[in-house]
Image 1 (cartoon, helix red, strand yellow):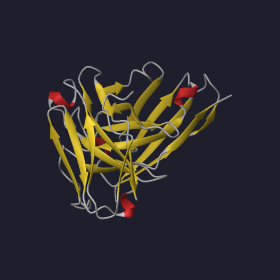
Image 2: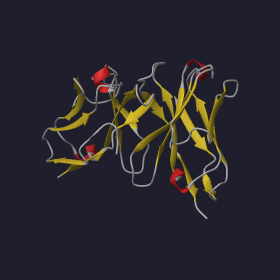
Image 3: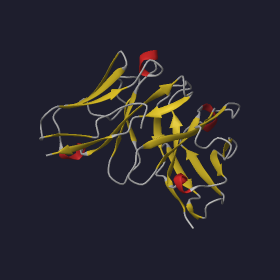
Length: 111
Length: 121
């Protein structure tokens, strides 16, 4: 059971918009700690997708965007493409656990 | 080009030991905290341990505290993870990752390709 809760799976057709939620608590996201998002393509290492809640590293398309409100954060992907099919993880810090925490991951399927 | 290359994984019996290494290049290694993250087969990501740029601050997940030891050699641009008293539940791909900035809620902006550790009799 992950401290950050993500839906196990989401899906969408090419060109559509999908969102992935990441729900935490007052000791992590709600405490003001940043949320980051990673994309993990099959058989590869995770790749930083969004940092500091809404910032995109160089090279990440603007189809990917992040937001944060209260004890939750969200990743939105617009203009879905087949190459977006991957697992997505949110990450933050928890002051009670005194450590980095990850969401359980969400598998995105492009129909 | 920033690059992280892990090595040292393999098959080990329960109770055994293994030492993982991560060779870093393309950035000023001593200026950044470094982290180990693992992923059990078919499962999600789990933070394992982190070390500050100087090596003076070290953190562990409760699941590995007292069994794993993180260290770094800034003269050789190398990060290490000494794993003792290994258990079946330690079976995972182990990734080293570079911290983006030095804060508790840091992002990891570069990851190695991972090295597989299998604990089995």
